[in-house]
Image (cartoon, rainbow, N blue to C red; front, side, top):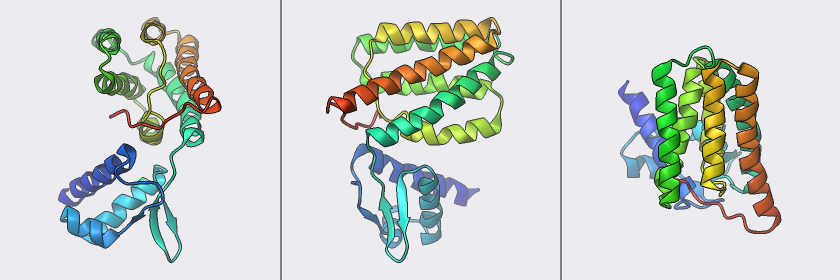
Length: 217
């Protein structure tokens, strides 16, 4: 159990450095240096890097080592394409599982996301928005879906697609209402459209040369 906790701690720390820009794309990650710095065995670092490779944050080059992979608009949009499918399915499955307390929690999150966005509290808004979508994924009661969603939660939710808070607020409400009434087709459609709208915004920003990768916190 302690080894597992240590691995997750190391993975999360390296992930934080990559997404925050502290560790740059193309930089070599030395297992020996990281092990010494973080006070863990090299095997723990190696396992953590394997997880980060699966998440698409690092790449392994034969006989050279492990390097930080490039994060750009194209990579982010690929993650959003996967997120669209999986979150649509999560919303569909949530229809049969969400109780009153769950729906109330989702509505409270939606209200608070809107309020925080109006106050320009970007980090808090992004964090709560991720919690909102994770809650719906958890309501799918599908452990494999939850596991698969980890990739896009890292890549596809590390940037904010700057859209009007009111629009996002209304989209969130439509997803909740569909789940509440057990309208599975509509819940999936609304969840997918919500993600598509964010992806299109990123694509437009990239086309106009305005896309700047920034960690959502």
